[in-house]
Image (cartoon, rainbow, N blue to C red):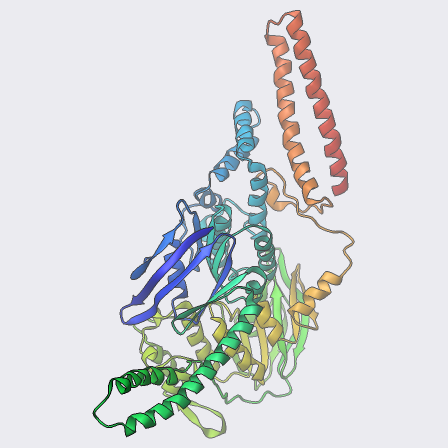
Length: 621
């Protein structure tokens, strides 16, 4: 079933043409990853698909009554609302039904309101959705539903927007970098969710493992042309390489033919026959094919790095806590020359604080950090580049000088340096605030690296970078001779770059693991699971978020356990109401017998369900 068709759309901003005459379709059940270089209009295309923007030419044709949800990089949320109010303001009537039911639970005396809310839950089959609703919020660490949006961090806002997009039950979910601001555990949960649920997806993401495990089709925009690959990321890489190799072969053949035809053109007299005129027209086509070349320039740097001494960085029993929350306690480590360390852990476990202490931006509560005399830090933070009003790209680099020193006494100009970072001469005179998110990150990376650090720290460097730039950055880092620390949720990037991990496990513990991320996952999965954990979600609004029960129930048993509580509560209310009627109603003997039988049926049903509830509860103890 076709959901939407993109027909010959184009988009430009002033003289800057992003794309022209793009056409493709999205069908039910497709999970499409869209791949393109930074600055070629990925976000603009997503905005057009979601209806947030319109193309200059062409159109997007939607199936009638198609419901589209859009997850943008910068969510537009009402800062005055709470998390719960924001979720309930979304377009899903089931959420309003759940909200009414939970309010009814808080006022058990109002039996009519409870019964109406309970019946509405049944009518809309909202019990399963309630479980999903709470699981999503729990997994995305949106614990305090009364917290105001204005007080949320950028990452929390992105996670809230993701929760809303998932909960609106869209026919088509359009996402711009969905894994940004998610920790590794969240990403793996989201992968599983998309694998199990029948979502139709169209997304831009730099996370190559996510593309590999979620997508069943890759669409690539390359030099103005669209290419579709019916498979996952590995399949795309294989077929893309074959396509580029084939194009190179065709171009080489065209060049040989062009030389031959050029010689013929030079020997021809001025008077042309009809046949020769046709050949002349073909010549111009051949010339066009022969002159076609790929714009696959790579970032190139030859750092004039100062050699590290024998003492690099020593951490002596450092500890840090905020209020009652211990981030790390008495951590000791001596960095050696050439070390390549990856840092992983859930959000809020102290990763960024650790880096700030390492670089002297913060002080530890106890212990000390000793830094060698030759160490020169290069610190790429999540905050990115500070944009000055009216500043152009070339001005950013010229703040470090008109000429940048390289190895062996050589130097290059600021313009040449920017060209090595894929900013052509025209782009260098663009205003920085006009750059795409990925282009800004690339410029920021440039400003960090041109200072010639020998101890490089990268905090989430892969966010918003296109896959082409990521491959180039990986190649550069593999050759980087100094010390390297990387914090990233990009598992592919981590696997390729680092030799061992600092795993921030929470509660003050940092584990030094000898291997990359995939090694760590294999190790964790191989550990004996003496106490397997299954997810449980309490039905009350105040307690489900804080539930730490180690359940041993299957998914269906968990669902049954939760429903039993609701059913018992409903039956108890019916029993109580019927017992009250015995005292208030003027029934005759026949009616009393009839209602007595009904009362006994209710009592038997309650006892049966209570027995089953206790049976399941014993498994959780």
